[in-house]
Image (cartoon, rainbow over all chains, first blue to last red; front, side, top):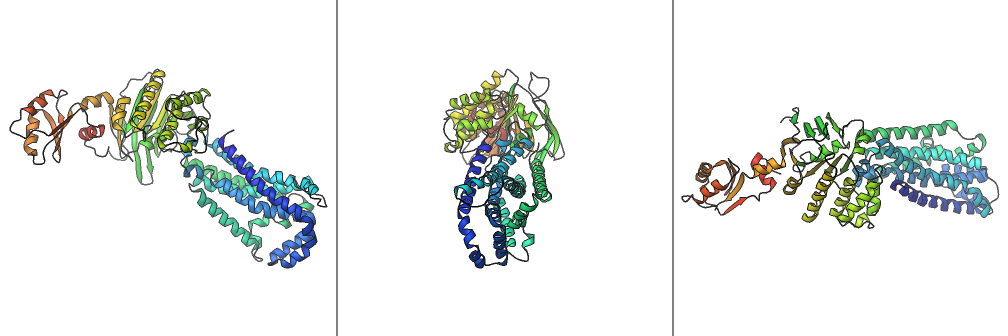
Length: 255
Length: 325
């Protein structure tokens, strides 16, 4: 197996285990959460957070699971993973002086770039799906009352993956032109943290990127299905960022 | 030579192929305002090792990177192993191997895995040959590359570049950082590789270890500040070198009188560096000059005579008057 796939596999395993650990704890905690939600609501310090707890209260099990797995788990851990997996994709090779030996082999630049992109993208997305699909089994193990369909869980994972892929692709595009992966990572993580901060500000919350994958969005999904337009737009953004990255890469290194 | 002026050098060596291994026309590269390689016309034939010699920043690496498609030319065209450079990078890289001058490596890989990575996309036999070469060079196949010295990493890249059966090998500073015995081994392997290909292969290497490269190469290209200064057969250069000698005198030597006397004895040119005279003889045989030197009773005798053991840098400086090599 090529080196980058091994790297991606290990990275994916690590990130997947953290995501799974966080999800297992959340699922196991659900019965207590359901009992104490009133008190939690009273403790919420910000109006946005109170609204969030209200959503969780009214949305029941699905709102709680979506909040834990997607809004909390994937939007934080997933975003961090997206940035970390992408920032060194090309810039990391330039930074440690391996760009030449990587490129001097008899493969097209496009193939090398797409392989590198795909390895990171799969490492990012596969754990989202696998952990999400494990939710029903976890609910059985921890005797969590209620039922969630695999269809709904899969649609939610697709939606979340589209957002993560867009973030990954944007970081990848920066990596295609840069040679300092840490600077790229800090830059994008600063931007995404700012987006999270915006989410918590009542008057500015609508400008946050994470409005695209918050609890309210996933609750609507339970009633109205996948928002194909939004998901398509997020995948489209990912594709555009990938194209930008390819353009930057081929300007940097001839075909 | 100005930036807009093309340097045209004819291929001096015979080639077993009708087309040159490397052919460049007006090839140039600039980085911002700085012209790293002035427009260059050059043909390099098969069946020979061509050495690119010059100081740091002379454009050697830029030229080699252009040939393997790691840089885009600012102007001009090039073909390598019969494949046009621009737009056919994969086809070129199938016919060419490249050992970069800057050592990049994946330290976590073992030597064998690293060679496998470097030879991905090549014929399966290439890995076996690379491992054989690595063993000959004394590299441990199972050890992680991060434990290797600078020289061992350089030899790993060399082994990978020598393993595939390709038409052109491009090696940037293959002996840099190696001890003299390993340098000799590397150059011997290169000669064997060339002979094994029976005239169907060209090797282009760069170096600033001048004293050894001239032994391995049939042809020497001298670069300086992006310009091609000279293109010579190594044998011709060696012959010209036989006309050079250095004489060291005491610090109070009468240099003007000595210069006149030396020219009378058969020196074509005399250049003084302090109390040391760099002499270019008018003929290949130094004996009449040396005999006359002994008989110069009215002038001080030299404290030291250096003949046949001048470095190529010294030879080059004396032949071309260029410092820094």
